Amino acid sequence: MQSAWHFTLDPDIFIRESSTSKELERCGSDPLCYAKLISKEEPLIGITESGFDQESFWVNSGIVSVISAGQWKDYEPPSTYEYLSYSLVVQSTLIHLNRSCRGLPNGAFQESRVSYGDLFEFSPRRNDMRAAILTAHLSPGGQELLANCFGMQYMHVCDELLSLDWLRAGRIHDNLEKTYRVKL
Image (cartoon, rainbow, N blue to C red; front, top):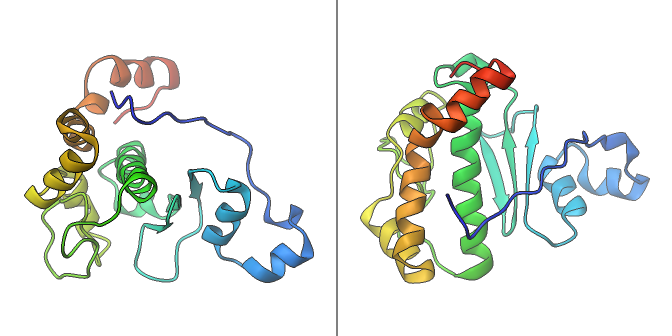
């Protein structure tokens, strides 16, 4: 649906121990550091089984993001596929913004005790992520930012992608179930 992005899937598992001693010393156990190393200054979204020290589901630095998938099973539903799909949309949009435009809406990713499902919202509590995924949308500030930076069609497609309706019904849903036996 989003023609401004494309993904190249690398199914190989990154093995930290295959790094040089200098890289191991520099990065330690920081998955974002390793993602930056292997990105070769190209956009990259890594997925790790590890969690993060802080109460976070992902980390981003410019055009590189890492999503933590390992702990989501404890928070289902929504399913791991829904969580990863939502996270990929959020991180792809953030990376595209970081690469092409500057500036996020006021209050973007700032800690708050309330959650309302905005793309640019930080969820400090793990249980709030469920609501964010189920009610995902763009706030007026987010709509304005994406429309001004990439155009109205991009903004509308991002809003559709965030809803995850494309994942929960239709061709993609049916293919996941039929081919991979994945039940959302």
